[in-house]
Image (cartoon, rainbow, N blue to C red; front, side, top):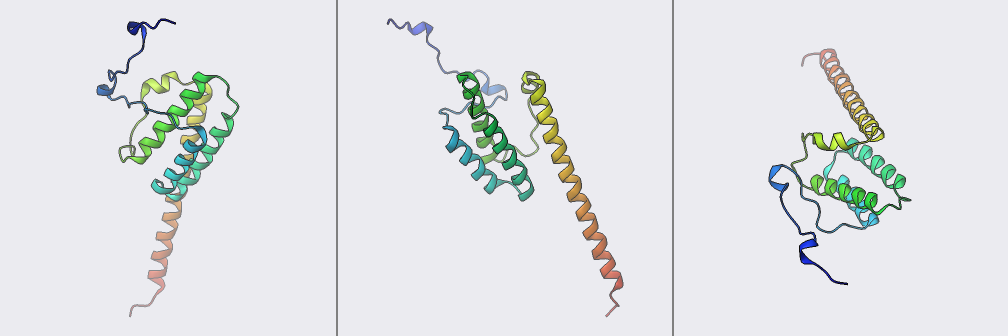
Amino acid sequence: MRVYSRLLATATDVGASRGFRQAPSALLPPIPLYRTILRTHRKRLDVEQRVLGDMYVKAEFRAHKDIDNPVQIIGFLSEWQMYAQTLQGDSWKGDKMDKGKIDKMSDQQIGQLYELMQAIQKQNQDDADAEEVSIVNALDNHKSKPDQ
């Protein structure tokens, strides 16, 4: 077989300067990647975020375990690997999702993203309610104590 060097793909960093994340250089196999994500959750997330994240990761990896299409497998693994790398850094907090990625999502993926957003908002509301209750209880306890 004759190889023409002009036809071979070469690495480029064209999109890197415009805010795109660079793809990981070598993909981890599914099980080590799964373990890396759970380990990163354990080290970098609060308990509530960790529980929600772990459940989501487990569900996604289970849902994709029987995929045979190599393009889908590579896309799945590369996105999760970029997620793990992003989470291991500090720049992810308060970061917004790229509009281009949202435009490429299917209706089902957008629905999953919406459900995730609702779960996070519900958790935040529950946390705020619990904090409000603890403040009210602390104030009530302070008022009921006689001055010493």
